[in-house]
View 1 (cartoon, rainbow, N blue to C red):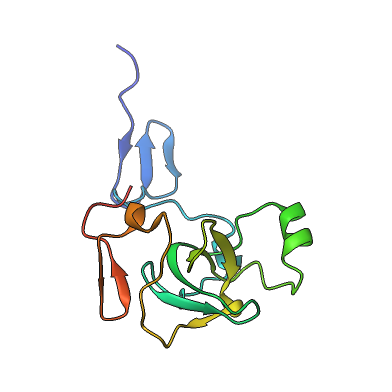
View 2 (tube, rainbow, N blue to C red):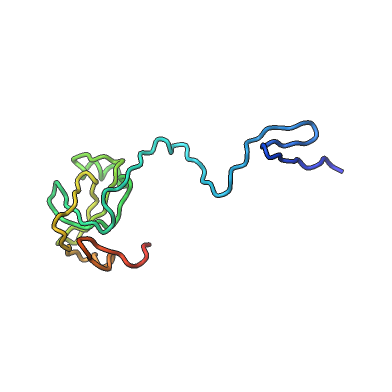
Length: 145
């Protein structure tokens, strides 16, 4: 017969012939591992939600938010070439459908303000993102992918 199997005590020790060894207590089930950089990540709430009407402060156009990134997610070359006002990369950035245009824009939060007009926008991709417009904002009734 071989040695008896080790026994784990409630205090995290393993007992077997020859004494006890201290090990780390088991982690409770369902807890996510802590990331080593979590203390260094700046977390900030986005000022605008998907469906919010916004106005670009620098380029004077209206639009609707279709997606929000918690921080800049583009390439460094794009930032250096396009984001000439050097908005912060660690603040929210927004994907916007501009009014009376066929393109989309990627805008730093500091360059946006609420659109006071409350009027709907015209954009060819609008129906792909939203189902309705009520009280100055666009609504999505279906599931989001």
